[in-house]
Image (cartoon, rainbow, N blue to C red):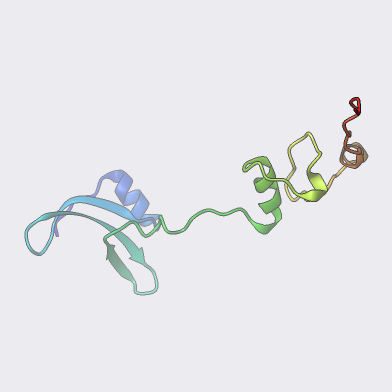
Length: 115
């Protein structure tokens, strides 16, 4: 449709990313925003109404799932709930003897005066 790409759009297109095209004239003569992305299976570009790259959300890998849940989302798991330090990559249980000691400490019970 006679649209000129910026250098950034060309680089993104060549890298396989979706390129946002604004003010493209559609078949009815109206300005539209659309995305194009090269489809390697078909060997040609495809047009999208929404950004096809947005649907692919980034999720932590299985080995880091506990680490992300504990460090970022404030969740706890039984094996590490008393630890003071953030978890390391792949850690689901106390790593060192010191961390194990922190974990094994009994909870303090209320020792106030009983009436």
